[in-house]
Length: 142
Ligand code: T46
Image (tube, rainbow, N blue to C red; front, top):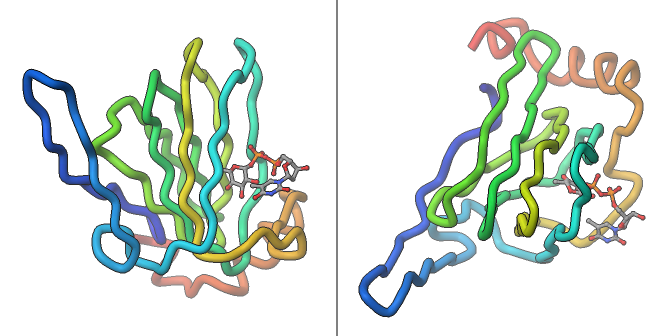
């Protein structure tokens, strides 16, 4: 999927449990400006339904699991996050929907910019219009 990739977060695991280390500019490919987390999502609730124009993020499910549907004008993929050692990088102009949060799931998000509502595209028709201009034909075949 264009502008998305999985990132391994080094794990230090043993009989005392597990620690994962995240470093902005190292295993996260941007300077981290903001961190937020999503919890207490009721069964069958879906979130997201938007894209970002210039924000990059890494999503990690540090407890439980959640599914993320990713879309570009020509691609669609569902990624399940269920491992605190695996981060999902989502770059510019990728539509995302989050669903199937398990009870107690904690979705941790690292973001490259402070919160700016004008960076969101929340209307899917508007997203298709802007993203088709943004991506080149060759990109959409990847
Ligand atoms: C994303 C996915 C993965 C803030 O005031 N500050 C913040 O940093 C954020 C992220 C949200 N908000 C406010 C804006 C809304 O009034 O919190 C409320 C809920 O946000 P939203 O409906 O956008 O939440 P999600 O779960 O649909 O999307 C969030 C992020 O907003 C988004 O950037 O990529 O998680």
